[in-house]
Image (cartoon, rainbow over all chains, first blue to last red; front, side, top):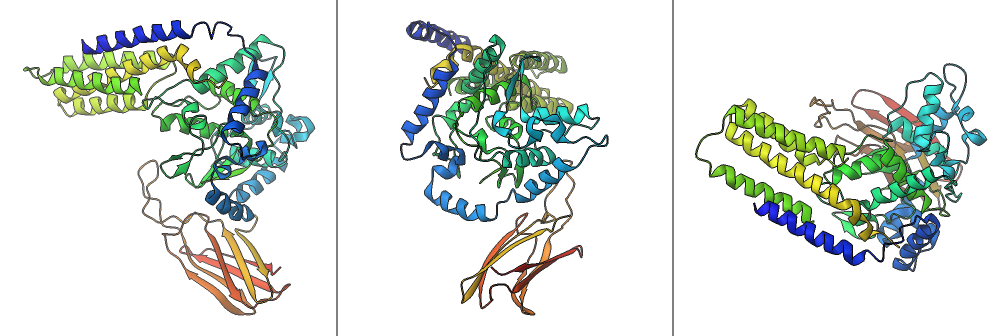
Length: 285
Length: 104
Length: 103
């Protein structure tokens, strides 16, 4: 009984709330360029001392002590072993004699900043991880796990060859691309899991704040550093790993890596970080 | 947080309700309660918003039932149903409310 | 297979600062895997740095040291261009050695 009442009451307030803000949201057109400008302005306004390109260093740009530790760590980056493995894997031909380079423009070198892209033929977003596994399957190889090890090593190498290049995600003039972008944005801001968190709760409202012993990273430029060596994981992790663990940490059942929702989310998040340099592979505490 | 708090409140309300029940629960009671919880969790799945706690509470219900403790099993199943319903409520209300948080 | 050891040694005239990163699982023997079975202990027992035929840094390690351990220390002496030898032995008898030039 009480439960019904409570829900009914919230629905009532919800309806009121909707009415109240209806005029503001009447023009619900999707304008990615304006979104991007507002998104970047929000972060530069919140952290006026930081340069735009510093945001890709995540928590290290937010905390002086961490920054010092990181500079020291960068002399011997923990992702180095993975990076080396990735370089070797990338150069090793498949059984049919072809290589990864044959699947990508510019032989796969220096192209990380263009991923994910919207594939107008498929009508969906294609991420770098997805493209890598499709490349393997097209050449008769079994796909890799999306979350770590091999996939992280390969993307680490591809990111490394693209370091410093500004993120350059395009939204083609295709209503499906705009819809994918909008859905990614909705996913980013939607609260989920028993803890009732959205991505934005941590990475928009609280970057630089601590969550237990960790310092939260800003959403701006967060994907530019992928894949990352996470000391907490004592290993490498991909964008897919970051998304799925974020979900389970807020007590939501994660979706499968490279489900449409995650692909759209990656599309949105990368687009609003356009112009910031690729800094992957990264190291995070 | 409101949805989470509501879930806890709802779950405890149900717990109290079952606790005051004088008769011991039977296997049939458990099966009905479990099926209802599972159905609600399935609906949450179709909304792409299941909670990990729903799954763990469901398996706790199953474990209690396997041990023959149907009182506990029914209580756990009802708790799981409340959690699943809260996740459905969350997913439904967030269909519009996500915009409140958007940076514009 | 690339070496499991990365070393960088830099001399400032009086002292040499050494940094090293070693790739090793460092399993303590107390951790269980996803199936609930104990992962057998596998860790480096001794790590040593030798300069001019003499050990300058020897570490007796156990399972308490983290995976892919990192070491940093400094010793008196050491000249630019000289060799610094690094080696480790683990509890399974495996070993690796590398030599770095002091910069």
